[in-house]
Image (cartoon, helix red, strand yellow):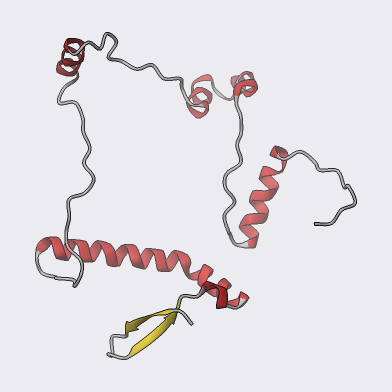
Length: 155
């Protein structure tokens, strides 16, 4: 059995089962029902730990504060345009087509039908959801999927 050892607040070591293949259907349901609470708790623990380590009042074995991912921005646009032009970039501005959502917002509800010919709706990657949520989303997505003829094969 695979698992991780963890110590309870009382100092008792326990093995937590992390072998997802060994779970019962009921255990899957219980764990998935608890997922939002567990994620909220993990975010709170991470935020508190980060704040306390950054403040210097907590040291966590094996963990340290490290610089985050850098980002870069122009100091000011006018200087950036001059610098790019000097470097040989003749057109420092980029033109980009609006997204379908932006275009629909601009034209208003009564003109959106004119845009439909140019919009491709791609289904999202399936995700596991509670049955009542999944049923509602499947019903809403039904027009996207064409009807499938019964060819007599069951697979």
